[in-house]
Image (cartoon, rainbow, N blue to C red; front, top):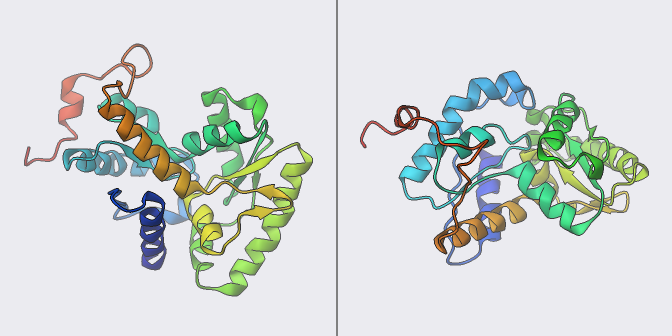
Length: 244
């Protein structure tokens, strides 16, 4: 797992370019085997929100959640006064500027149902093909960074599932998995079955930097009318580090 995290940091630094500072933070005890299940996300949510609060307290002008299911995205927007981006939402809307119909590929079997929930939440149902999955867990994806045989098996299934997305009218593909997306970038895979695969990290990093720059111009990062109304101060206080 450490090797994957080191590669991710290198990918982020390359995407940010010289002069830009983007810090990568990882949860100390991530439930890798349960990625994609809402129960696992619920158990991790306090640690995730605490990590975001720590980054903002340390001076972050914008934050991003690099998980393909955008866990904690809307609660974080309620809590924090900086732009908060989610991997799926950010990359999906970028992709929909590139093509009329988006295909989504997950790693685990629980993924497609979760994706359908998110596309309904984000209002993009009509422009997203039926999600597909490779049916593999995150630990197996992580092992494929170093194990060529494991990667070959993933690559074969990748072609099959993306061909199915193409048959359903998809014009490009979003990988709804931070680890799987980084694996394909690491292995130099940017298309399959004739469809371009969106590079998650470069898109997310550049959108993050853009969000911070726009915020510095005085544009409010969030509307406090309606869904993202600010919670009582006591709720925010519970996330602040004890030293503050």
